[in-house]
Image (cartoon, rainbow, N blue to C red; front, side, top):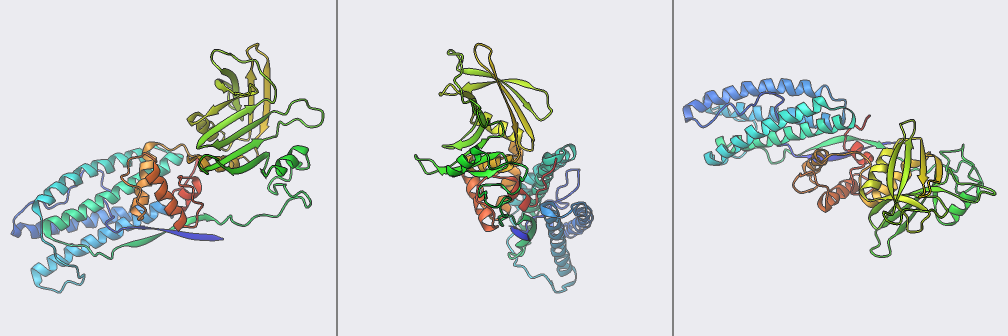
Amino acid sequence: MIRSYSICLVALLAGTTCLAPIAPAFAQSTSSSQMSDMRAEIANLEKEISKSEAAASKYDGGALAAMADLNTQTLRLTKSLLEARVAAEETGAPIEIKVPAVKPEPDLAAKILGEFQKQQKTVNDALKEAQDAGGLMGALAMTRYETEKLTLAQLRQGWLRAQYGIAFPGDAQQTVQFNAAPDQSQSPQDAKPGVAWADPDHPEIDYSMAIFSSLHDSDYVMSGWWGIQHSKAAIDDSAEVVAMNVSGYGEGLAMHHPSLIIGCIEHEARVIYDTDEYLLSDFNSHRMKVTVRVDNADARNESWSELTTSEGAGLFGAKAEAFIRELRGAKKLFLRLRERNNASHDLELDLAGSERAFKDTADACGFSLLALRREDYRAIQTLLNAGGFDAGTPDGVWGAGSSKAMRAYQSANGLEETGTPNEETLTAMGIEISG
């Protein structure tokens, strides 16, 4: 079932698609010259409407199409108000669009004009970045471009209000329908009757293995080769997740049972290679050499932290988050850990079912699985603000305020309330995630 989610964008929205800096055509002038200035602005708006319509036709639905359409609608509204003002002054004809008059503020208009010119440059820079980028970065760059145009539109209408006393309708708020991700709330049936813990999405895995039974008894839920356990931190009741990949787990008479463990413990992301045997480490550095190969990429050497148990090595915090992002979408992983005496311990892993393990970990620790830059976070904050979800000043820093706004948006649209800009949420907002 496909559901529609909505986000409200106030209709002080439309901007210009022109590449050259464009200030409103009419500047400080006498009353007699204002009429010709307004006619010139109407002609300019007609050109911008044509360009905005052409730009909107290039988007195949989603947030970008919605915002571009609002740009066009607001340009038309601005043009209609100017035409009505000109008609009223010249002919005394009745104004069909009824809006209250406000007192012009020339000093404020001059300040807004300066901001308008600065914002035009920002729009041009955003467009250039969007043209140069591709994939996810390209999609987010286009979102930044459209949101910068919305800011430009707000300045345009603010300038008209301050310069000429033209007020815009207060009920111009519009609702934009974004395409939502498919409803995945329905739980599939077990793949193998009698094996209650089996993941039906992976019938190729033998869930009768003893390790899966043991994980199930410890309240782990299976996802491919992963067992995932949810709990709460004793110190503050924050969400904790432990996900264990057991595809390299020895069965039968195997003496050791190595595994890869990722998780979120007390707000910190962790990636652990558990060798299940005592290792000789470097007592001075407490670091261990680990060779990593993801899928068919070239192997690389890294330095991981020694575990306090002396039975493996791990990554923590930002390094763990980056490693989890790298594994997203990968099918296999090879790890080789070397002891101080150069003895090696290899682990080959099938990563089937990892998407859920990674998502649960990221949601618990409040980080995104997408490789987002500061500019990307700023664009998302701008979208939230435009929809009435207060993320504060769009500064690209994803803090408590942004998380609160994101949770509010997710709650309003029937999404899991993680507070993070995950793929499901961005898709619901209409931002296309690709490549």
